[in-house]
Length: 194
Ligand SMILES: C[S@@+](CC[C@H](N)C(=O)[O-])C[C@H]1O[C@@H](n2cnc3c(N)ncnc32)[C@H](O)[C@@H]1O
Image 1 (tube, rainbow, N blue to C red):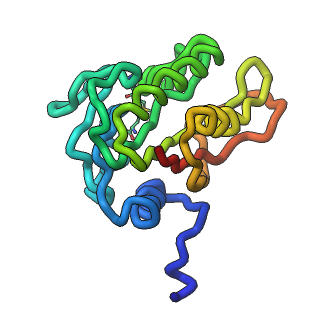
Image 2: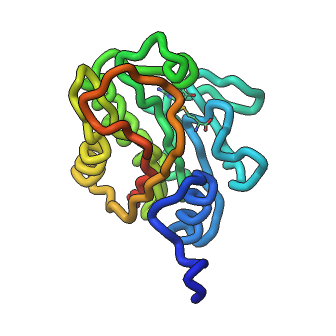
Image 3: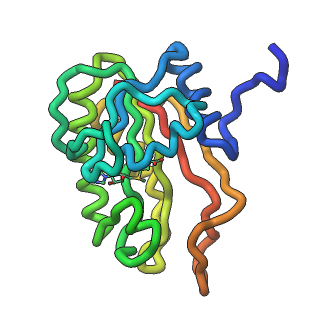
Protein backbone atom coordinates (compact mmCIF):
# COMPACT_ATOMS: atom_id res chain seq x y z
CA UNK A 1 0.00 0.00 0.00
CA UNK A 2 1.29 3.47 -0.93
CA UNK A 3 1.66 5.71 2.12
CA UNK A 4 -0.24 8.45 0.26
CA UNK A 5 -3.28 6.11 0.09
CA UNK A 6 -3.42 5.59 3.85
CA UNK A 7 -6.71 6.85 5.30
CA UNK A 8 -5.99 9.38 8.04
CA UNK A 9 -8.04 10.28 11.11
CA UNK A 10 -7.76 13.99 10.27
CA UNK A 11 -8.58 16.08 7.20
CA UNK A 12 -9.77 19.45 5.93
CA UNK A 13 -12.29 18.01 3.47
CA UNK A 14 -15.53 16.55 4.91
CA UNK A 15 -16.46 14.82 1.66
CA UNK A 16 -13.12 12.98 1.64
CA UNK A 17 -13.68 11.95 5.27
CA UNK A 18 -17.21 10.68 4.53
CA UNK A 19 -16.04 8.67 1.51
CA UNK A 20 -13.19 7.22 3.59
CA UNK A 21 -15.70 6.18 6.27
CA UNK A 22 -17.89 4.51 3.62
CA UNK A 23 -14.86 2.66 2.20
CA UNK A 24 -13.68 1.44 5.59
CA UNK A 25 -16.99 0.65 7.28
CA UNK A 26 -19.74 0.37 4.65
CA UNK A 27 -17.97 -1.72 1.97
CA UNK A 28 -17.84 1.41 -0.21
CA UNK A 29 -21.64 1.52 -0.40
CA UNK A 30 -23.47 4.87 -0.24
CA UNK A 31 -25.34 6.35 2.72
CA UNK A 32 -29.02 5.25 2.66
CA UNK A 33 -30.63 8.02 4.69
CA UNK A 34 -29.88 11.58 5.85
CA UNK A 35 -32.53 12.83 8.33
CA UNK A 36 -30.97 16.33 8.85
CA UNK A 37 -30.42 17.17 5.19
CA UNK A 38 -30.71 20.99 5.26
CA UNK A 39 -29.43 21.93 1.77
CA UNK A 40 -27.35 18.77 1.35
CA UNK A 41 -23.90 20.28 1.81
CA UNK A 42 -22.40 16.79 2.19
CA UNK A 43 -23.36 15.94 -1.41
CA UNK A 44 -22.15 19.11 -3.15
CA UNK A 45 -20.83 18.37 -6.66
CA UNK A 46 -21.76 14.68 -6.23
CA UNK A 47 -18.42 13.82 -4.58
CA UNK A 48 -20.42 11.92 -1.96
CA UNK A 49 -23.43 10.10 -3.44
CA UNK A 50 -26.75 11.56 -2.24
CA UNK A 51 -28.80 9.07 -0.14
CA UNK A 52 -32.01 7.60 -1.57
CA UNK A 53 -34.00 9.06 1.33
CA UNK A 54 -33.41 12.59 2.60
CA UNK A 55 -35.44 14.44 5.22
CA UNK A 56 -35.41 17.41 7.58
CA UNK A 57 -37.81 18.88 10.14
CA UNK A 58 -37.76 22.01 8.00
CA UNK A 59 -37.36 20.88 4.36
CA UNK A 60 -35.89 23.57 2.14
CA UNK A 61 -35.67 21.78 -1.20
CA UNK A 62 -38.01 19.64 -3.31
CA UNK A 63 -37.60 15.93 -2.63
CA UNK A 64 -36.71 16.42 1.03
CA UNK A 65 -39.30 14.66 3.20
CA UNK A 66 -40.52 16.20 6.45
CA UNK A 67 -39.66 14.03 9.47
CA UNK A 68 -38.63 14.76 13.02
CA UNK A 69 -35.48 12.71 13.54
CA UNK A 70 -36.73 11.84 17.04
CA UNK A 71 -39.84 10.15 15.63
CA UNK A 72 -38.78 8.48 12.40
CA UNK A 73 -41.32 6.13 10.79
CA UNK A 74 -38.71 3.43 10.03
CA UNK A 75 -37.94 0.03 11.49
CA UNK A 76 -34.67 -1.76 10.62
CA UNK A 77 -34.77 -0.10 7.19
CA UNK A 78 -31.24 1.24 6.58
CA UNK A 79 -27.66 -0.05 6.52
CA UNK A 80 -26.08 3.39 6.81
CA UNK A 81 -27.41 6.70 8.15
CA UNK A 82 -25.64 10.04 8.53
CA UNK A 83 -26.77 12.34 11.36
CA UNK A 84 -25.75 16.02 11.43
CA UNK A 85 -28.02 17.78 13.95
CA UNK A 86 -27.91 21.44 15.09
CA UNK A 87 -25.08 22.07 17.55
CA UNK A 88 -25.65 25.61 18.86
CA UNK A 89 -26.93 26.27 22.38
CA UNK A 90 -28.39 29.73 23.25
CA UNK A 91 -27.38 31.28 19.97
CA UNK A 92 -30.83 32.19 18.72
CA UNK A 93 -29.65 35.28 16.88
CA UNK A 94 -26.43 34.12 15.33
CA UNK A 95 -26.25 33.27 11.63
CA UNK A 96 -25.43 29.57 12.16
CA UNK A 97 -28.37 29.16 14.57
CA UNK A 98 -30.73 30.69 12.01
CA UNK A 99 -29.41 28.40 9.28
CA UNK A 100 -29.25 25.16 11.26
CA UNK A 101 -31.49 25.55 14.36
CA UNK A 102 -30.41 25.78 18.00
CA UNK A 103 -31.22 24.73 21.57
CA UNK A 104 -31.94 26.97 24.55
CA UNK A 105 -30.09 24.80 27.09
CA UNK A 106 -27.36 22.15 27.06
CA UNK A 107 -29.80 19.73 28.70
CA UNK A 108 -32.17 20.25 25.77
CA UNK A 109 -29.35 19.24 23.39
CA UNK A 110 -28.64 16.17 25.57
CA UNK A 111 -32.30 15.11 25.46
CA UNK A 112 -32.41 15.69 21.69
CA UNK A 113 -29.44 13.34 21.19
CA UNK A 114 -30.96 10.68 23.41
CA UNK A 115 -34.34 10.75 21.63
CA UNK A 116 -32.66 10.90 18.21
CA UNK A 117 -30.34 7.97 18.94
CA UNK A 118 -33.32 5.83 20.06
CA UNK A 119 -35.16 6.65 16.83
CA UNK A 120 -32.05 6.20 14.63
CA UNK A 121 -31.19 2.89 16.27
CA UNK A 122 -34.69 1.67 15.45
CA UNK A 123 -34.31 2.83 11.84
CA UNK A 124 -31.00 1.00 11.40
CA UNK A 125 -30.71 -2.61 10.35
CA UNK A 126 -28.77 -5.00 12.57
CA UNK A 127 -25.05 -4.09 12.35
CA UNK A 128 -26.00 -0.87 10.56
CA UNK A 129 -23.64 2.11 10.58
CA UNK A 130 -24.49 5.52 12.04
CA UNK A 131 -22.17 8.39 11.08
CA UNK A 132 -22.55 11.35 13.47
CA UNK A 133 -21.15 14.79 12.72
CA UNK A 134 -20.73 16.67 15.99
CA UNK A 135 -18.67 19.25 17.78
CA UNK A 136 -17.54 20.49 21.17
CA UNK A 137 -18.66 23.97 22.24
CA UNK A 138 -18.38 26.68 24.87
CA UNK A 139 -21.57 27.76 26.63
CA UNK A 140 -21.77 30.27 29.52
CA UNK A 141 -17.94 30.27 29.67
CA UNK A 142 -17.99 26.50 30.26
CA UNK A 143 -16.10 24.24 27.88
CA UNK A 144 -18.19 21.22 26.84
CA UNK A 145 -16.12 18.39 25.34
CA UNK A 146 -19.41 17.14 24.01
CA UNK A 147 -18.07 14.33 21.84
CA UNK A 148 -17.27 12.58 25.11
CA UNK A 149 -20.94 12.74 26.14
CA UNK A 150 -22.09 11.49 22.75
CA UNK A 151 -19.70 8.54 22.91
CA UNK A 152 -20.91 7.67 26.44
CA UNK A 153 -24.55 7.87 25.33
CA UNK A 154 -23.81 5.69 22.30
CA UNK A 155 -22.06 3.07 24.44
CA UNK A 156 -24.88 3.11 27.01
CA UNK A 157 -27.24 2.33 24.13
CA UNK A 158 -25.06 -0.59 22.98
CA UNK A 159 -23.71 1.08 19.88
CA UNK A 160 -20.14 0.00 19.16
CA UNK A 161 -17.77 2.94 18.62
CA UNK A 162 -15.80 2.05 15.48
CA UNK A 163 -13.85 5.21 14.74
CA UNK A 164 -13.49 8.96 15.18
CA UNK A 165 -12.39 11.35 12.43
CA UNK A 166 -11.44 14.99 13.03
CA UNK A 167 -12.44 17.59 10.46
CA UNK A 168 -10.09 20.58 10.67
CA UNK A 169 -10.92 24.12 9.63
CA UNK A 170 -8.61 27.00 8.73
CA UNK A 171 -11.26 29.63 9.50
CA UNK A 172 -14.26 30.09 11.82
CA UNK A 173 -17.55 31.69 10.73
CA UNK A 174 -18.29 33.59 13.96
CA UNK A 175 -15.92 36.19 15.44
CA UNK A 176 -15.32 36.26 19.21
CA UNK A 177 -14.24 39.25 21.27
CA UNK A 178 -12.90 37.52 24.41
CA UNK A 179 -11.98 33.96 25.27
CA UNK A 180 -11.54 31.64 28.22
CA UNK A 181 -10.77 28.45 26.27
CA UNK A 182 -8.93 27.41 23.12
CA UNK A 183 -10.86 28.41 20.00
CA UNK A 184 -12.09 25.23 18.37
CA UNK A 185 -10.97 24.69 14.80
CA UNK A 186 -12.29 21.16 14.49
CA UNK A 187 -15.41 19.02 14.48
CA UNK A 188 -15.89 15.24 14.44
CA UNK A 189 -17.26 12.40 12.39
CA UNK A 190 -18.03 9.58 14.80
CA UNK A 191 -18.66 6.11 13.37
CA UNK A 192 -21.06 3.89 15.34
CA UNK A 193 -22.34 0.39 14.69
CA UNK A 194 -25.69 -0.97 15.87
C1 LIG B 1 -26.28 21.31 10.93
S1 LIG B 1 -27.69 21.30 9.89
C2 LIG B 1 -27.34 20.02 8.70
C3 LIG B 1 -26.47 20.52 7.60
C4 LIG B 1 -26.37 19.55 6.43
N1 LIG B 1 -25.64 18.35 6.81
C5 LIG B 1 -25.68 20.21 5.25
O1 LIG B 1 -24.50 19.94 5.04
O2 LIG B 1 -26.32 21.00 4.53
C6 LIG B 1 -28.91 20.62 10.93
C7 LIG B 1 -30.25 20.37 10.29
O3 LIG B 1 -31.05 19.62 11.21
C8 LIG B 1 -32.39 20.01 11.06
N2 LIG B 1 -33.15 19.64 12.27
C9 LIG B 1 -33.23 20.30 13.45
N3 LIG B 1 -34.04 19.63 14.31
C10 LIG B 1 -34.46 18.52 13.64
C11 LIG B 1 -35.32 17.45 13.98
N4 LIG B 1 -35.91 17.36 15.20
N5 LIG B 1 -35.55 16.50 13.05
C12 LIG B 1 -34.99 16.56 11.81
N6 LIG B 1 -34.16 17.57 11.44
C13 LIG B 1 -33.90 18.53 12.33
C14 LIG B 1 -32.31 21.51 10.82
O4 LIG B 1 -33.51 21.97 10.16
C15 LIG B 1 -31.06 21.63 9.94
O5 LIG B 1 -31.40 21.61 8.59
